[in-house]
Structures are given as structure tokens and as C-alpha cells.
Image (cartoon, rainbow over all chains, first blue to last red; front, top):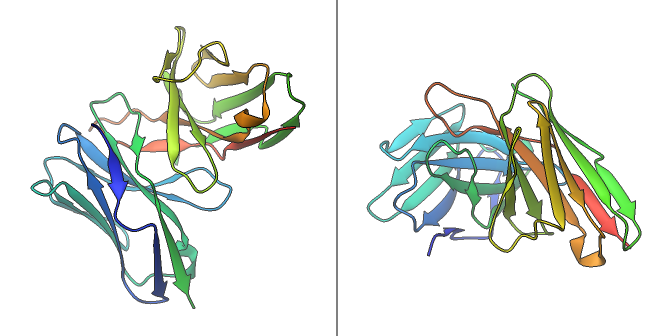
Length: 112
Length: 118
């Protein structure tokens, strides 16, 4: 069936370290994948996306890697800061309909 | 960036009453908006796609008569939870997509509306 799931529900890192959040997906027909950040009591915030024909995309302090062979997506956050503490969701989109199917979420905690 | 506003942010109502939640795109036009539901410590579940000027498209398992969606203009979609019951208590979030030339996936989300049904 169609699903987007995450390997680990929680991740704790030291401030300044790099963080890697992983995601597995099962629908190989997805056109692109997105990472969202959700702070407590707020709506999700777009971080970065990557199209299915790409392997890597970099943003400001973030990098998304896509491995279509093993259907794996990861988000790398460089020099993690306390403000990065949140729940991170990967999501997949098909076509230009715009709706996202969300994974379960990983809670990132940054220790000072 | 684009802004999506939801109102109210919190609402408490008695069982059996109806509650309306508004979702507005403040600085762009959104022909399509999406309504999600999120339970504590869980992921977002898509409820329906709201289409301007036409009927909403509901996901499987979502009751159309329970969750009424109206998208009367390019900047406003409303979700009405009818005859609310305690199990409807949840965090409801709307989103809208800014049209992108590259067909990218950036969705802008509202701040969410927390509904508590007593």
C-alpha cells in the first residue's frame, strides 16, 4: 500500500552537531518529496523539497538526499541549533495536485 | 512568503453544536486548499481537498456530512464540524499551495485550529 514512514520517532543531538532525520517511503510513483518542520501548537512549515529525478538538494543549513533504489529520504541539518527543536515530517506528493501524504514524524530535541 | 491564516486558533464547544473554522490566504489566491486533521503526537491526516467554486473532494473514511467544506472565494475556505462530539476534538490545519512555475511542492499551512468538544 501507499505509505510514508520514518525510521526513528525521536532524535536528540547536541547543539552544534549535525542532525540526520530519515524517512522511508513505499510509493515509487511519487513526483516529489518534502520535509516539513512543525513546532508545538503550530502548523507545519515547509523546509525543502526534492523532485523524484534528483538525488540531492541543498538549502540553507539543510540538505535533502533521495535514494530511489532503497526508497529512502533523509534530511540533514548542519550545526543544529536549539531553534531546530521540533517535529519533522517527510511527505510525498504526486502530480501537481498539491496535497501531501505525511509520514509519522520525528521529534528532534537539541540539547544546549 | 505566502501567509495562510486560520480562525479561530482555539475553540471549545458543547457536544452537539457546530463549529466553523476559516482558512484564508492573505496575499495570494488559492484555487485549492487542503484540510488536515492531527491528533496529539500523530501525523497529519488529509481530510479533504477544497476546490474554489466546486465541491470538495474528501478522502476515504471522512464523512462529508460531518465535515462541511465551502470554498466560496479564491482566498477563503471554511470547514464546519457539524454536531460535534468529543471524538471530533483535534487540531485542524488548512494549507494552500502557491502556484509555482516549476510545479514544486511548497504548501503554506495555517497555524491550526484546536477544537475541544465537551
